[in-house]
Image 1 (cartoon, chains in turn blue, green):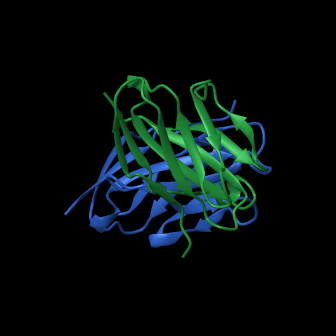
Image 2: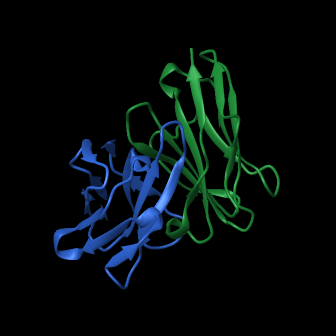
Image 3: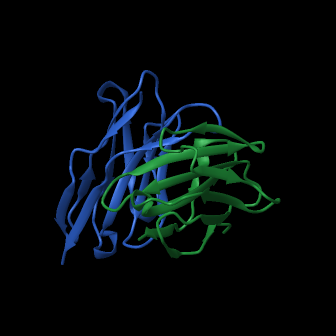
Length: 114
Length: 113
């Protein structure tokens, strides 16, 4: 069964510092890969996704993620964090093909210090 | 920009009562999903729906749960007899062609007392 691991439950960074959130997946083939963000009391907003092609994908709000097949990783990065980035970040994987579920990681709670 | 909407935003119910959570997916989307997130835990898949039938369901989605697309716009999740452990945030999602473009609604927070 596919699985997603986000090893960092909580991360604290200073505003303006760089950020990297880790995500590893376990699946026989290359799945579709996603990062979602959830602000307190809010729904899930899609930040970016990887299906194929260029392994570095750009998303909204200045985020990017890099797919590394050899490491089964899809880490999320941002060069300079803003206080408004404080939220919970979820990595998710989906099977190739239509109509299939997403499997989420346990999430990483990001705190931004001013 | 089109978005998925859900009603109500919050619902409190007594154990054993039936609840219906409503979702309006994005209009040209064909695949519909329900997920839930128990407080402090990860988002879990419940069920996917395509072409007016369930295409996949998780072990969580037992006989107490049902889904329906009663008309061309709504997608509902019914819990027949709620349990305390059904308390969670329930998210509806929709996509055009499967997980590649799955968009989530704001969620319904269900509290079972």
